Image (cartoon, rainbow, N blue to C red):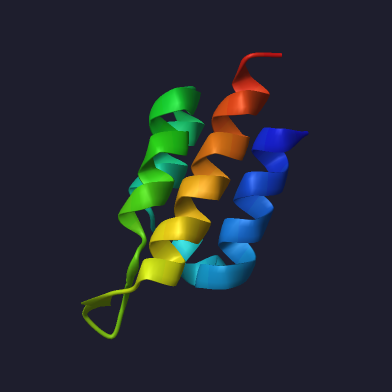
Amino acid sequence: AQEHAAYLSFTYNVGVGNFKSSTLLKLLNKGQRAEACNQLTNWVFAKGKKLKGLVNRREEEKNLCLSGLNK
């Protein structure tokens, strides 16, 4: 449930199109779930600028995602 919630939050924020073309989804489809979770922290830029708020959000999503793998 945590892994799904993390991806749902991420997709809501970056958009379905970005999610569908992401390396994250490619890894997820290959069954590389931990690697997919770790991809979340790459999505911290808006208009070419790294934003602290996105860094914080993606770190939280990544931690939520990884906690779901340990269940």
